[in-house]
Amino acid sequence: MPTTDPLAISQRLTVRAANRDWILERPADLESLWQSMDEDDPDAEEHIPYWVELWPATLALCDWLARQDLAGRTCLDLGCGLGLSALVASSLGARVVGMDYERDALYFAAANARLNSVPQPLWLCMDWNRPGFAPGVFDHIWGGDVFYEHRFFEPLEKLLLRCLAPGGRVWFGDPERTVSQAVWPRFTRRGWRVVNRGQVVVPFEQARMTVNVWELSRPADS
Image 1: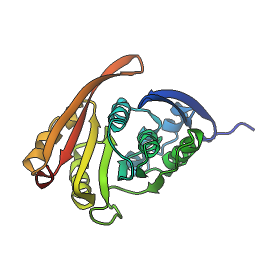
Image 2: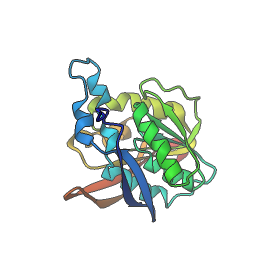
Image 3: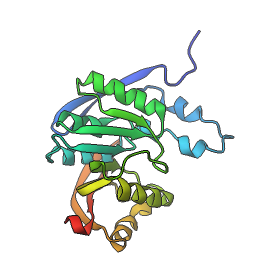
Image 4: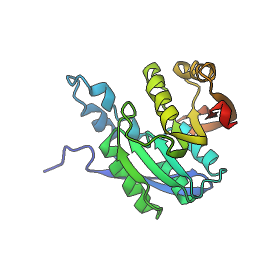
């Protein structure tokens, strides 16, 4: 009898990032995965399966991470999805926590670490509205395309203020969405040092997307 579970059949992609090829496994039937969502669930919006996509912001962020000295650093990947940026950092010797709200994403992220023979990050299913980390524990925190809703700013800034170590740096890959344009001046007004570390054009499906890499730090750490 054919399965109706959209997670049961996977596909493998070969992706070029951070100067090497990566094999990424994800659900093969993306359309069925989206259609399987319960529209009557009041929390359905919180479980939209964005994690199945490999977003251009993540690819730009991976190339940025490859140019940093991450060996021995304790790092947090916010909304790690399929795990690519966490795997890049882990391959560079970082101690990485890959955090996502969806357990299914973490299942595939762990599988992808095995496929690429990378030391497993610590995969955590956690809501960034209620992070369970000790203060100042992370040298670096990053996320790809995470400011796609206005309501994410406050909880994410609160997480950064609590969890970033003195002298630490935060990196965000951002694809110039209208909704995120006000994010960077907003961080500046709240006392963050905000620097655009570069802009790249990343192929995406049948088009190309412009992505900026933003670096945040506290003024006393500059």
